Every structure is written in C-alpha cells, then in structure tokens.
Length: 250
Image (cartoon, rainbow, N blue to C red; front, side):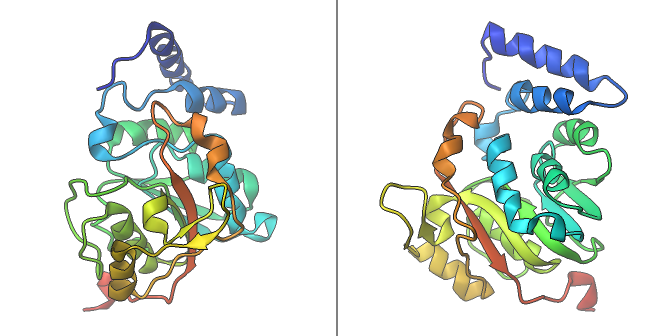
C-alpha cells in the first residue's frame, strides 16, 4: 500500500462516499477517476497495475471508430472500467464485458460502468466469454506474477499474454502497453519509428500478432494523469486473425 498525503486521503474518502450513491452522475464519475486511489489498499507496483488517465482513455477509444462503432466490447484487466466508460462516450457500443481480477476494483467499476457485465476473475479462465468486435486493455505491465498462460504466448511479459487472449475473442484490439513492448516508438520528439526488440519478435513469432500505432496518439500529453507513476506507454492496435476459443477446441 502507498502512503497517501492528507489531501489525497481526504479526496479518496470523499470518492468512497460518492460510490455509496445508488447512481453516479457524470461529475461523480470524473471525481472518482481523479481521486479514488487504487494504491490506498493495494500494492499496485507489485501487480504492475495502474488506472488509465481519462484523457488517454478517450484518445485510445478513438480507435473504435466513433459513433460508427455499435458492436460488442471486451475490456480485459478492466480496473474501474475507465476504457469502457470512454468507449460509451465515444461510440454506440452495444455490449460491454469487463474482466477484472481485483474485486475491490470491480466494486468501483460496477458503479462507474453499471451497464457492463462484470466478471471478477482471472483473464486466464477465459472460456465462455463469447465473441467481440473489439478488445481493449490497459493491462498490468512486465514480468509480474500470473496464474496461467495465454494459448500461444509463453514468455514473461504480462501484456503480451493479455493480447494473445484477446485474439481468441475479438476481431480488433487496442492496448495501452509499455513503449518497450509495442514494437514501435511514437511518443517522443523524434517521431514514429519501428523498434521490435527481441521480446517483441518472440511475441510475434509465437502468436502471429503484430502491433501498430493506429491513429498515432502522443501519450506524453497524459504523463501527469497517472496516480503516482508516469510510465512510458504507447497505444498499440491490431487486427486479429480470429483464433478458435478454448471451448471450440474440444
């Protein structure tokens, strides 16, 4: 757990009181996103998990295609559902399924995105979810503890496991991942360039998935919006070749 300042603790407590309301207003949701501290009761750095800044979430959801998108959305490692909430504002998404391991985050998420179906459990238990038009995620980063493996990727980077699992359920994917895992760099002064370190090449070889920059958002604009961290990230997009789901293999 992180030690909050008095000001942070006061705002966090106010956010908790807001979450007691039967229904939250848009202003309530914005306050919760800004001031509910995910590290108040959990060691987020150990889990590699931090909630998405609102501006970054809305820019990432541009990849859905705006109001032309009216399909089903799968939000993996959903946290409090910030990406799903942004998707609702940016499109006419018809169905949202949020998968989140941490029940405390899901408790908040159910108030933030009450129209979504919330699955509290591991993303590695992914049978029976069905098919989706889009998958989105701001997953935990790096070589952190996990309780399973993706169908094809067997390396140590958690974000790649998430992307491989998404490929078995969705047609397209949009992911907020570390710059070092994206296969490209965009959010810098030099502009776009391919990088493709060895871990990325291994991921591509095992899964057949390549990642691109999509509409090209410079994520540095949102560096101050994270709670207590400032990770170097990119918005990585891909079109999946649909893979059979686990329950279709037997």
